[in-house]
Length: 172
Image (cartoon, rainbow, N blue to C red; front, side):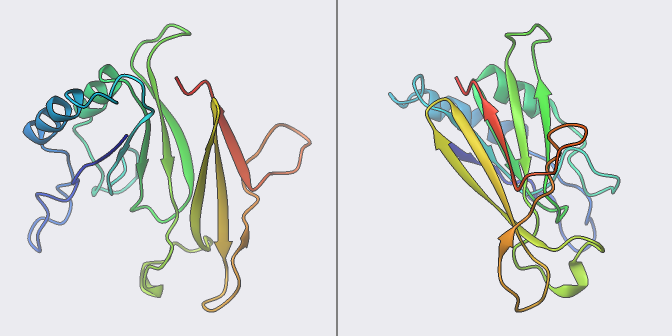
């Protein structure tokens, strides 16, 4: 089950940094999807544009909606905007079996050159759900009209070469 959220609902040419998720929008969305018979037995993914963690002001500062998503059983959160691939974790319950949301951030697939992050190529993620595992494969293109290829950036431990993917287990 995929839930799309609008993190740009307050943005305009005067207020370029007011990213956020409207509290009533999340309430209405959760109320609606809970009525779907597939709700209980589905992997739940939320998607929006702006990041939660960023050194810039145009990030989502009120993250209370993350608690609501975790309580509703969401397992993954996908966002963009910072134009580089990253991953992080939001944990609602601190115990080892507690509810958690893995956060997957994509790079930029086609932003104008003026918006490219120095030192980062164009990127996209390919997500593969298989059994109880999600594999996030990162692809890159370093030249404007160059070929897409694996982006080996995910460190797997000291002394090991980085991989072009990472895996998340225990999806449910």
